[in-house]
Length: 500
Image (cartoon, rainbow, N blue to C red):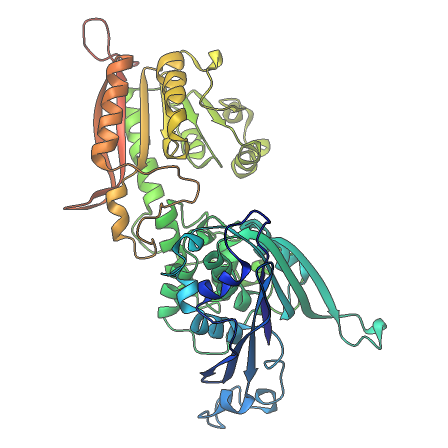
């Protein structure tokens, strides 16, 4: 098996390409060997100069070692254990070697070049042979959303007989500007996923490995459920656990991550079990603790009911999770979803199945594209506006514009704002210290910071305010999410109601 990582710094870079050796903790002037339980991993540098540096990981697999200790009665004891593609095709074995040999780099640590650890580097990764039963499309779909430009070349069964067609092996070349630790984490997780098999026993600790290795990118990957199932070898109890933990960290419904619903075949036809649809199994709906996303929506709906709101704005509606709940209640006679992303609005339209809803239900909902930092006269006069997990996605210098657009211009009778509680982040195992719950968050407030912002906005725009904890609570860290309910004050100082 072969993996090469090439770094070519821009001309104005203050660091040489050979600093890749510091990040990988492997000296470019040496050839090093590392014993593995199934063979030997070698690290060498075919090229290492100031302009270009290439590190190669070569894994020599001993098929005898792979089966040593197995009895002849084991179900998979056969000639196939000795005659196979494992010495040549990048699979879970290469992933294990990568995690062992480049462990420190994978964890993003380098005391000698700490600034480069945080720097996105121009990288090219080459894998000459990767088992990929989903075909080139599968490799494109898993790597492209992570920022890679992906070039996938199918490998023929036999170049001498082109009529035999292509094999299920591909050559993959990835180019992009990413942190080295992120690039290694992508390979560590996705190589066994593309192969569709793990060559070792998958135990419960694999969930922890997956959550740690994929922190910051898997929860928002469009094919996260399929990746999770393949990584955990389709062990459904582990898959459910992993998806629930991803949902909690990323504040998403487990159902949205594919833990319950069959979302269909994302990669088209395939042989074996490479298709997500073939691997998705309906999970028992036994009683379980509701996810944070569910608890948050319940809290928002309760606040809307208490305010007596009938005409509601969902500002930053995203894929429509709250819109679905609002449509389900007849009390909300007019609902407007606003988002800056047309893609999100189209996704919401599909998920809500507006074309299939009865006309009297569908006509209660309007979807509009718009930035919340700009005023829109069409949003004035509503009973309530919801900013559910929105403010933390706004750059701090633009918060003032959002405050004016929502509280000053639109000025609904009630405004409900939810946002993560940064103090609670330390309780999430899969969340590295100092990182946010979502890669697009511009900040995350502590309870004191959120309260200070909310009181200032309320005083400036004539609202009264109360705070509501959302989700699990910790005696010291508080609740996982925090919610502020703003209610417009009348001229006599009382709060303004919309339902008498």
